[in-house]
Image (tube, rainbow, N blue to C red; front, top):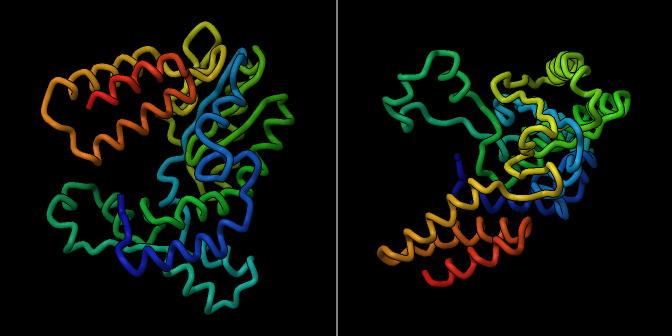
Length: 269
């Protein structure tokens, strides 16, 4: 995570509120968007015979600086202003600051890390990434409709769902999706490509969607064990407690009954 400091973060928040938040992303985008969330993304794919999940590799790093400047020009800003706005939203790490661990990476990886890119942790990065992926969403939505499927995207997670025919269509979907992504400047991560049928647990961005959006039993048990352990140990610091509360509230939104049990444990800390 590359979180900007002080004045730069203030400038980025201003760019976000005064410019980027006023431009709606594509309807298929559910990440970092008002009134949409992991849950609304997952809900679109509940009770489907088949769910196909794909991941965009190095999502933020895949968006070149020129594309960010071009986006601001498309919004009507002069060339020089667009260049300055883009510069405020981009980051190039200092190799000396990163230190010797960087040398352990292969050269292509080091080069990518040290290149100018959208930093994870900057307030503007998610909105800029969504807007830069607008044309990708348009094309993938059209692809899904042509195949009788539902499509949505949460950040770098792409999900398609539909009937039993998707099992036969999967190879075509994967190949066409890969081509479209490449044409739009993105690349699929083959290690995170999955096809899930109703015969198995269908998980979309951490949410089980077989019958309704729900949390997996394993995830519930894991958090419950952490809360029990914290209750028996020393006092939990405020930041960690806030993190636990966020997880509990997420589960409450999906499964109120389980969520209430976890909330009672949290309140004992």
